[in-house]
Structure formats: structure tokens, C-alpha cells
Image (cartoon, rainbow, N blue to C red; front, side, top):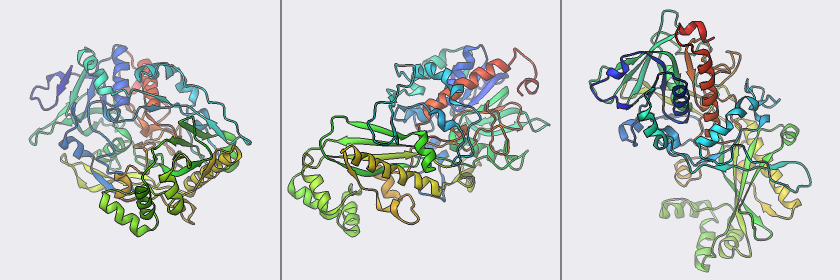
Length: 520
């Protein structure tokens, strides 16, 4: 059944559950279905409703103090089904080498790709991908082994809240709630066992209600999971799971944006290529992983007047800014001057495409989610994001684009121009509201690694089974547990991890007994 937490009748939550899952996105929804199928009683709690509401979305507002980022109440969606309700559907499998340590990536995953491979068929079925396994790399003629020509798969995309709403409502093993906002977690005398999770609706005089369970799983995403853990400090001043001051640290995105235009020697027949570096190239150059998406852009010629106007606007920073103000958004100016004119006026003679890049980010301890002073409607402190990049991140971008230019020249494909900001002595991702609103943002809406997985509690918040270090019965699902971010869109991996967690809990949760005695 699915209930509204705003209803005065909350009797369905008065009994103890086997597991209380907070968050109904890809991780929470998958975990709930997995455990219910094994016969466990599940409470699935969602702070949003079936549709986006202002009062729910406002809970995500916060401060940005580091690199420019998308507005925090826009980059996520707080609704039944979570961020699957607005994702693009692009899926891929993290390659085996991205799980492993390297000199330039000393912190790595405690598990390997082989630990997640068994969950590819079910994850592929959930996302309606057809093939159960990731398709192989495409052939790529190249003078030097720099790149792999990889393939992605495309989900319709599946909106999990819509796909599974009727199933959740009809499942006797799942009691779900919408508009149920987590406001506290209570610990037992040992401070290592969660005894209850406290929820409130949006009603201003709501005293709240407590859900009891043997196991609790936070599946709230890479921002909200650490924010909640840091806020719940009435019994542990540093916050739950934060004994080593790691909750919220190592925040990673996929630094990504349209980097350049490709000018081709001839018209292309393949609409898109996806280049990723080989492990040998990464090791030789001392860089991290990345993806270069090169898209052939077949556009109709513009009139001479429009082409001259576009070239003029791109000629100087002042006219570019003036034109942007008149139009309400910046013009696509990656070349400028005479080249810009020819590209706009005669695309048959000057065929072009775009080069979009997304990179694995380095793990930086001080790139982090913190608490701001301002509080939300429930008295919880809002989040403050301090996103940082390091020298290796910019070196990865520059090395990747340079190698692409070399590949284009060797194969007589064309040429690219590396953006001026990346060639600066101390490069920094361009930012500002104009970039965000034009669609030229710097991230992939992917929040990762803020409760990262590690065997050593001094290096991560959860262990290889996603259990919070120092806690007997608290688990985390979602991309916040990623050991490192790779370059791959995270949703498919999130579901693989949730299925694996379902297997783990299904094995260690007995038909009864004391949680702390079995979940070690």
C-alpha cells in the first residue's frame, strides 16, 4: 500500500518492520522490491509526492561556496521515484580498471567489477535495455593505442516511480508513504544501533511519527544522505557515522561540458562516436578516465545576413555579452571571426560537430557537503556545497582533447580547437548563471562519493556491503557510496549496488533475532 504521511491515520506504521528504506529513487525502489520478494516486511518512505511540489522541492535549497554549480533545488528532484523521474536514460557499465587503484587514483573501490557483473541482467531488465550485457567496444583505426570506441545503451528512459507505483501499492510486503520527511534517527544506548526513524508531514503542527525496524537504509542521494547524517547529532555531536569526519567529504561530480567544435575534412556518416582512454594511455599520461562524445552536427545553411551577425557577435567579448543580453542567452561562440562565419554560412563546405567531455573527478578530501547555518521548514540545517577540482582534473581534460586532436590529424578526420580557458596557466571551469541557463553547465547532475565505500573506516563511511562503519544496522544505497566516480552515468551502477545490497541483507537477516548480533 502507499499512504500519505499527511493523513491522520498512521496505524500502518505502528508495527516494527524488517527494514525501513528512506528514499524511493533507483536505489530505494530497487532495494524495497528486492527484499519484499524475499518475504521481508518493508517500510518505503518518500519525502516527496507523486508529482513535484514547491514545498517539497524547497527542502533541497542550499548554499554553493566552491566551483559554480547548478542550483541545489534544481539539480535534484524530490518525488516518488527520485531522480529517475528526470534522468536522460543513458546507461553504461563502469569498466574494470576504474575500480582499481592507480598512482593517480590511490583511493579505490574495495570491490571489483566482477562483484557487480551478476546484477547486469536484472538491472538491464529494470531499465528495459534489451540486451542483458554491455555491448563491446567498436573497431577504431588508430596509429597509436589511445582510445576505445565505446558504446552506451539508452533506457526509454524508465521512470521508476511511474513504472512501479501500482506494483508497490499492491505488494502486501511493502508499506510505502509519500510526504514523509525524515527529521531524525534515534540510537540505542550503545550509539551503534538505530532504533527508530522519525518522520513528519508538511502540516505545521504535525508531531511526527516513528518507524521501528531491524535495519535502516538511507537512499537519499549524494547530497541529502550526508546532510541528514550530519544533522542527526543530538546523540552523536559529529553526526551519525561521522566518527572519522568523512561524511560529506570527497564529493565528486563528472566535470562535463561542450568543450570544442570539430571541423571535419569531409561530411560524416556516423552521427556520434564515444572515445574513452585505454588503461595504458591513462597510466602512461598519469591521468584519470574520461569520455569524449563527438557528435556530427548536420545543420542547414544560414543566410548571409545571419551568418555575418553571428560572426560579429562572436568577434569580441563585449558584443558577445551584448548579444546574449538581447537574446536572453549566450550565442554558441567556440571559434569566432572568419572561421565562425564560414561554419555558420556553409556547413556543407565546412562540416562540423561538437566535442563534449565528461571526466572522472579526483578524490579531494575538502571537496565536500557541509551544513549551512540556515535551516529548512523542519529545523534541519541546509547543505553547503564546496566543490573543488585539482590539477589532475584539468590535466585530464587537456590531455584528452590534445589526444583527440592528434587522432583526428592522423586519420584525416579534421581538427579541433582546445578552449582558451583550459590552456590558461591556472585553468578553472567556466561558470555563472548564464552558462547554466544556456545548457552549458559543468556537471552531469551526478552527486557521488560523499559516503564512499572503503574497507578502512579512516578512508570511507561504509564498508564493502554498504553498512556504515561503527553502526550495526544502518546501510546506505545510491551513488554516495561510490569508491570513485569513473566517467559513466551512475544510475545503472546504483541499481546494481542496490541489488547486491538486497542479496546481502537477504542472507544476513534471519527470520528473527537481534540485528546487532548478525549484521557484522
